[in-house]
Image (cartoon, rainbow, N blue to C red):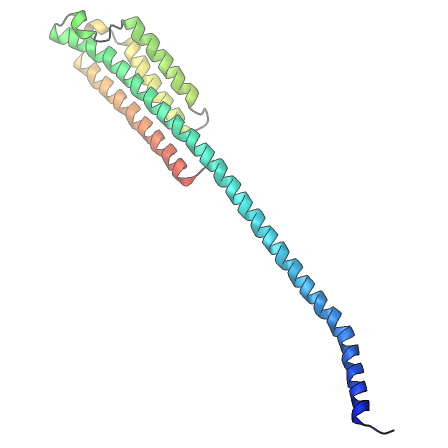
Length: 193
């Protein structure tokens, strides 16, 4: 058998055809496998991104509600302290500076009005706070101590010691309230849900 260039071309083309029949599908299978893996990776990254976006949206929603809650709590605490201050210190001024009730009661509130409004504000604050959070419970405890003190003081005879106790209790409520509000603000900054 004679081996000519034409015969060589036939065998070479046949060998290339056989090799391409084996290698071609194998290469296509490898490419398809890699594309499937890439699509899975893209889908996983998209799912993770969607989850992160959803978490961020929830955190933003909670943060806006928490900021409103912080503002409302701050107003209620300030109103409660103002009310107690007006009630307690105006009686002290009346007793120690011989002013008349008309000069002292700038807002025209009676003792009963002050106690009723303070009870309402204390209840609003209590409803805004969590029954489980120790910081919230600390604030409620300080508010209740202040309310009990104001209610039991005999307003006809306010002593300097009672004024000192009043200022200590008031400062305790303010400090506890400030700590609670700062803690909640930190939660907002961290994006806690």
